[in-house]
Amino acid sequence: MDIHSINKQELTEIIEKNKLNPSEELLSAARSVRNKYYGNRIFVRGLIEFTNYCKNNCFYCGIRAGNKNARRYRLTEEEIMQCCDEGNRLGFNTFVLQGGEDGYFTDEKICGIVSRIKSKYPDCAVTLSIGEKTRESYKAYRDAGADRYLLRHETANNGHYKRLHPKEMLLENRKQCLYTLRELGFQVGAGFMVGSPYQTSEMLAEDLIFLRELQPHMVGIGPFIPHCDSIFADRQAGTLQLTLTMLALVRLTLPKTLLPSTTALGTIDPEGREKGFDAGANVVMPNLSPTSVRGDYALYNDKICTGDESAQCVKCLRGRIERAGYVMDMGRGDSLTI
Ligand code: SAM
Ligand code: FES
Image (cartoon, rainbow, N blue to C red; front, top):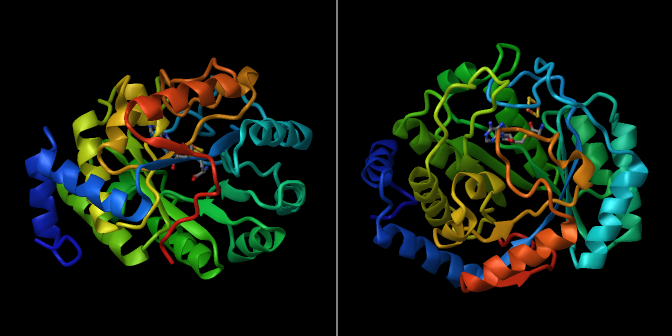
């Protein structure tokens, strides 16, 4: 069966068949495709979570505006630069600036930070992940030198999107942002949570079909994990098995995409990230944020790696990657997707 042409019904059946126990046939097919294009290298990105202020109220998220228990922080431009300096010392060549939708960081501030990083480290790729903005804002970020943009679509099913977000947030707008970013020349990352409330296998099939249309350079998928102060506090987390199934299916659908094995996957299973590599993933994003704020970027409970210094995280990850039979690659790691 050719995954590039099969329909929603057939994809749903494959997901149903594998969701409790992904078959070795599926996982090894995903590994072969990953190896064919990227070999056994795992690319490493330095993640800087620079603000946990957010104007949105996504029902699943621990740092949504309505969570009055969240301890809020913003890194200063100097602190962000210090994270990059530390990343550079450790050998990183890509920095991912992620945060809530925080009005304090105007386009002018974001552009200033991006151009400062790019002029100090011209060979590094800068990725932004700061939510839905206007075309003008995205263009300004691109002109300032940003190379990549991560914006998970969260779910490609409109009814599902409405059950995960307040009514002012629209799937249509989120999808349009992704197409705009692509058109502006960003390397674009879409993605979704696995096992989010109300999600069905049919909806996951729709996610694959949307990704097939968008052809993103990167796809961020990880299990949904509840946060005690979110609307979905009492929901079940997504499972390891279903996440591995979806990683493998994304790899087969988009052979040349960059596919992170996420911190959320490492949170629900101590060997989750290694199992993600064995399902076709080829990126990890260790945290470069100062340890003093790490615990406050709490999208979900029990997040791993919140206490370790950046250098410690890199050492630990290198060991994990090598023990799993892969090679850590700290280069820019551009996507082969055009
Ligand atoms: N504000 C930016 C945005 O909207 O893209 C970036 C930050 S947002 C917190 C990054 C991603 O975290 C979201 O796209 C979502 O998929 C994920 N996330 C949020 N809450 C989560 C949860 N409870 N479990 C797992 N992932 C979660
Ligand atoms: Fe904005 Fe989660 S609600 S980052």
